[in-house]
Length: 551
Image (cartoon, rainbow, N blue to C red; front, side, top):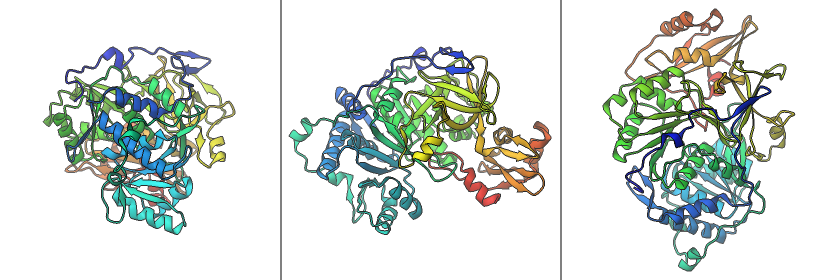
């Protein structure tokens, strides 16, 4: 790896106290200089690759194939040269439909080097979603994993779109990434320069929203936004470390993690996209031990699986120093349980938003379990009454609204939705419900759209879900509202169970009755399914569950 003796400086990794302030009930993070220079973000990444050529940049766990930073630099430049020969110009949109693999980062950088816009998609495409994404962003070239090539080809044909498709891997009848990287002149490679941007607000990345309230929207992220995100890295002091992330680069979060790894001079272990289960949890632990991974980024579902099974009891994970998690609510009891299982590991639970262009908060070593931590630099948050728009003070639940200098530029081809995303004062409406405490630490309690109306009472699904998750057999749960002709809605729980364990409907109903008020009772019953559906960003798709069980 790049540095076998790397260590994490706790004081650098996490601040010990909130360094912002609260003014007029508005939570304000620390202020640092804002990046507004017109610099292509990929130029910054390329410079980092060239400055550390012998560092191992990425390793594929399936093949043990690896790329040094020098190889990543050369391959991404070759990709960019090929794109240029195809006529790709600044501002063009190029699709990247991928899972975690070595070529994904090569292609992403190659696109942005030219000041083209990289549009990342979920790698598991149906024909319907392929049609939707093609119509939404109209890419001229799409790089895709083999399993989605047929759907994209058929969708492009149906839409009468002339789209060139290149596969990451091998597939008969399609040009591959390896093919397009051949035959480039060494002088061209040596003299290559990134295409400059003329405005810091030029878009470099288009990522998809979670689609929790409808079809995913295409969120546009500027070069300036990405620069400022990387300037705000709380995970510092990581030079030479070995990292692994379960989020793929189809997420804005995944892209930023990969960029941070390069800027930190770290080695990234590239593992297949996984869904939390016994096999995945065991495999991840084996990767951590084999590659001596020091920091690991994942979603709360994997954390919950770790603490509810004996998987971690079989491994020492002595090299692991930091776990970063984000994407959905991590219940307090599960964070505390993980800390007991891995006392040598710092656990950082954070909060972010695709539309806010990434992370907004991060925990410190003194944070309370169950919180999402303190505001990162240059972030402001207000908690707003959902009915009166009043700005609320500490310990009062309302909608979390955000003001940051690096927010999205808007939704691609959707100015109406862009306008609705902000309130009259320019604050981004997150749609999340939360509060901050007297110490300025933020807590997220759920989504506004998920709340259940029972006899004129707003019932929090997250509150019920947190209680149900205390049962040792429950892996995932989603509580939705089942229509009722008199009471409006009854809470219903949809549950998936950890393999090898059992739980009955009555056990769960009784658990809720014993721990929560009467209006939280599961009058809509309990349904058991093998696996809860998820959106492209990994959140439980309650929309799909409502269509299936509560329509």
